[in-house]
Amino acid sequence: MLKGKAFKFEDNISTDDITPGRLFHLRSNLPELAKHVLEDVAPSFGSEVKPGDFIAAGVNFGLGSSREHAAVVLKMAGVEAILAKSVARIFFRNAINVGLPVLICDTDKINDGDELEIDLVGSTVKNLTNGTEFPIGEFPEVMLRILEEGGLIPYIKKHGDFES
Image (cartoon, rainbow, N blue to C red; front, top):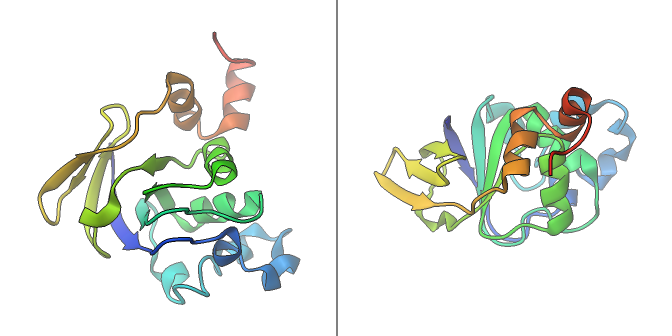
């Protein structure tokens, strides 16, 4: 069970919004880059997000380049999961690979600051602020195992391969 505060974002948040291109020089200093996460669309996000918090977004979250840094710095900043109406495919895979759950659901019932409780296995989100509950897309078992291990590399190090 995951529990935290939601930060609400609109549609079409790109990887350049998440990790601005002008900060390209920080790619080798990810902790510093994480301090600037989403600063062009939400200047205070980096200083307000706490470990265990969530992003709730509209459609097409993570569009743009295949920057792995986008998912990595969100996780480093403390984001526990991303909830969105839809997500760019490569961002989705990058996020799962670093152990950051991306949940496809209707985020219209989530407001900025709402407290959420997420059950990945039961595929539900409870909005503790307004009392609503709604489904999220189910994860295949292998993705749940990757997330439980903290990402693809820790999974492979521990298990050596995927069970079929």
